Length: 199
Image (cartoon, rainbow, N blue to C red; front, side):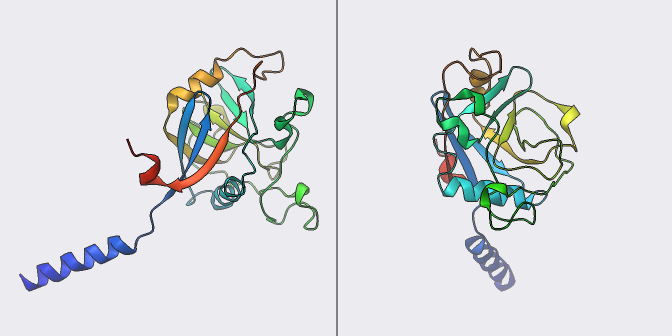
């Protein structure tokens, strides 16, 4: 009995010392999405996204590219203004990861962290140019399974609540550049998982 008591006390202490996992809450006029992260397979992408979110970098940016059956894309600081022509051309990593000019933060990019996480509906993945190591701050969320992107783009998280918000965003009227006709701005915060999933 004494050994069982010691084991139970040990388990309680371990649980008390375990840091709760943080998630992102991405808020839009259509509602909130809660996203968990995959630091085990994409630590740099997760770190950069969290730093940007904690610094308010994403707040006021928009989903500037929406394609039904494919993705909703955002995270470009250029999307804050009324000039839609430069949407999709901006953004940088939140810290220096060895790519770009260390003295010029707007040139910083994140090296590829391709992994086995699939591009399923709700997958959070990083946009990039044809250069594998060119990810900055623009990210996309899959509106459907997009297997052709697997192992070519870095999946670093997943929507765990609010999948319906993706469908509302992706089905918004859009222009000939796939930019929503009416801006869909976002606010992104990082909070403990239990707080984000409170009912």
